[in-house]
Length: 124
Image (tube, rainbow, N blue to C red):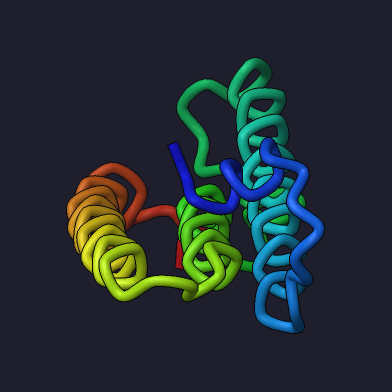
């Protein structure tokens, strides 16, 4: 469970500070982006099963859902509070791990997209 969630659950009166508030805002923004991206792609694919999705947030980025996921975890890193060395070390390792996973997933999916849609003008 994330440290920022524990802070919210405890109802602590300790100040969140600028980084904490910024972290929560980034988390919410990331979740919104990921949700909108998944909804738009699902709606698009229900009508255009074999076409490249290039509508809504998908017209800005090839992986907006992964961007939203990354923003969520980046926000979690800032929102955890940096109140203890072990907690900060754990959060830093976690952020590094999820960044590595998202980077590898994006690279792999980009290669698959190139094979499947590379000849389509809307993909380029």
